[in-house]
Image 1 (cartoon, helix red, strand yellow):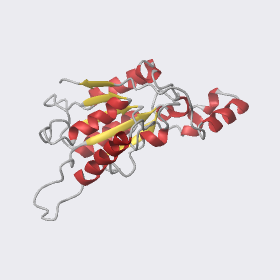
Image 2 (cartoon, rainbow, N blue to C red; image 1 turned 30 degrees about the horizontal axis):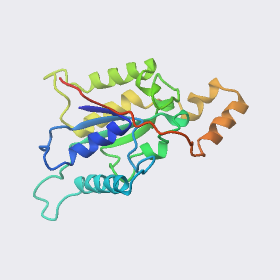
Image 3 (cartoon, rainbow, N blue to C red; image 1 turned 135 degrees about the horizontal axis):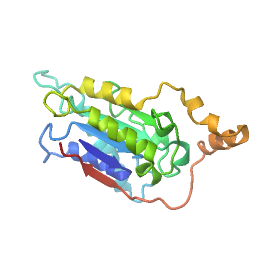
Image 4 (cartoon, rainbow, N blue to C red; image 1 turned 180 degrees about the vertical axis):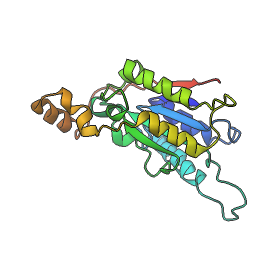
Amino acid sequence: MLVGHSMGGFVARAALVHPGLRKSAVETILTLSSPHQYPPVALQPSLGHFFSHVNEEWRNGYKKGVSHTSSPKLSNVVVVSISGGIHDYQIRSRLAALDGIVPSTHGFMVGSSSVKNVWLSMEHQSILWCNQLAVQVAHTLLSMIDPVDRQPFLSSQKRVFVFAKMLQSVVPQSLSWMNHVSGSQSSNFLASDTREAGGTISFFSLLHPLHN
């Protein structure tokens, strides 16, 4: 399993399609406030090209070959993206989305304000140390372990099921955070989500291999 924050989450995905990495070396990735669709700021054209290349490799990685004699390269890989929501001005939710990259059968994106027992939007860095989220993520990763052989579940469907069960709240997102703010504040928050935030982009990233 790999857990990546910010660009570390994208680096984790890029590593999986690197020709030097053996197949099935990593089969589960969890990212926190990571850009997946394209870079938040393309300082050089090469960065945008690299994102496009990696995402194209992922799309092809879930497709069956013409011969159908072997399973797709990424057929057993599960990816879940947690976005910070409206308070993350660096990585907007649309950047953290997995649409068009990872099929819904193998992963999904969830906003932190919709995560079970969290229900809070959070800033780009604070997503790392928010206690509610850290505890829920820890419980989720522990739930990935098969109690019989003490190894991560082999089935991708089982892992997606566990992620959904542990992370997706039954409380509608509209109720999970708006109950804590006034009507005027809610309007301001909603408006802020439609604007691109300026300022300096921090490329602090974290990539942790989790050992069994």
